[in-house]
Every structure is written in C-alpha cells, then in structure tokens.
Length: 106
Image: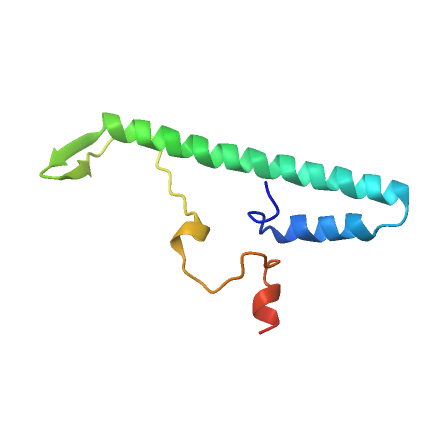
C-alpha cells in the first residue's frame, strides 16, 4: 500500500507512533503491531476479492438472459453481499485524511 492509498486510521496512527517513539524496544513493538495489522488487512482484502470471483462464477452458472439483462435463477448456494464504500458512497473527503479527523475538525 502506498501512503496515498492508505486511509486506514489505525495504520496512520501506528506510523506516527513509530516515527515519534524514542525507545528502540517500543519501535520494534509498534512495528510488529503494524505488520500484524497489515497482514490482517491483506487477509481481508484477499477474502473480499476471492468472494467476488466466486460470486461471478456462481452467477455464470445460474443465469437467465432476458433481452439485454441478466436475470438470475433461484438456486441453492451461498449468497454474498459486499459493499466497497470507497467506490459506492460519495462523501466529502481528503485523500490524505486520517479517519474521522477531517469531519471533527470542520
């Protein structure tokens, strides 16, 4: 993740704590915490993308084409509903904002 694409408040706060930590042991502890957090986020990202792929494949096997629209049949399987709020919800934001700080400072 680049610093421009990372809007996670936890990531930003840990980075700031690492930057200002004066004790070497504290920096190591914070760095480990940051890496654990990134690993968890990567697992969530993989899980989210994997569910999208599975849902698309399920849809290919369970569809009726009516005109130019695809109408899905009733079928036994898993239903997946996922929202990518960054792509779907239009709200005022700064690309470099740290969590809810932007709205609290307005």
